[in-house]
Length: 361
Image (cartoon, rainbow, N blue to C red; front, side, top):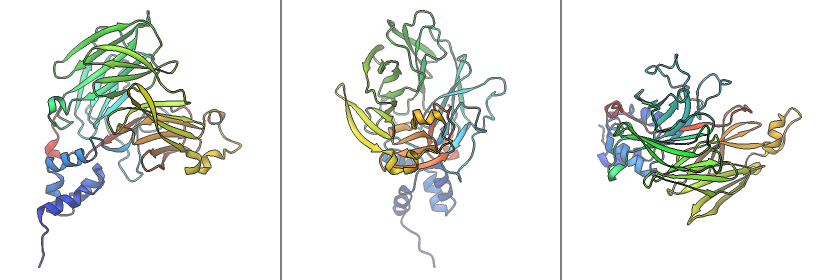
């Protein structure tokens, strides 16, 4: 005789699992009840709210030819690659720019943008028809998911999106900004900012309705998309740094100098230190370089090359490998061997998406 559990208990049990695609996919084949719960959009929305909208970090995309695959998974037992079967990638050399809510932003020599959903293969092409000339080293671009627009909760794979672009003009160095909306299919320009500093070739971050983009000389550019304004402010000078959106929805900054990692948040126009960590105590082998250590690592032994949504996971490049560092638990996990010329990676996170919820963008 078998005794079935009440429906609400199945729900409560599954809510405690790690909400990664692999874990939930395996749970869905345990029994009919679990299969039904895992494929229920209401259950997926509960997981989303429980994690404050931050998906599980699966790995990172990159633009470096030294590695055989464009996606590096944080779990060796996880899937090794995503395919571009539905994308004309043979004729164009797509480069990664950003990841947001399970979607990925790429460009092909700045002629077009591609918004791609690796879990489903859905994609959306956007022609670069902005009101100014963009592209090249001094351009920052970010992908914004409109899943919570107007107070609604729309699945990310079927919601509209926006692209925010800031760039130094090729001839005048003036700072320009523009936004593309998939809802209207149009680009909208913002007023320009006289030459101040050039955009650094590093990812920016979206907080609320503002794109924050690193500039040279320890400055940050703030592009307010609602008010169509451009302003700048200073950030801490602490070795190698990266901007990110903190879990509480404010602008954050992570920096590493030597083996010391420090995290700040911006509060009332000031930077407040939130955490300081000595990485050499967590991984002592970091501070014991061998005679064969690359001189590049002697100068900068640890470098932040990527920050996941919510700032809870950092990807660190070191002489002994690439590590994923969890800021909250202060744990480090090696995900790949070291490669000294890897400057930027694009952390990718996603929730399990059942076939019934996979609709084209």
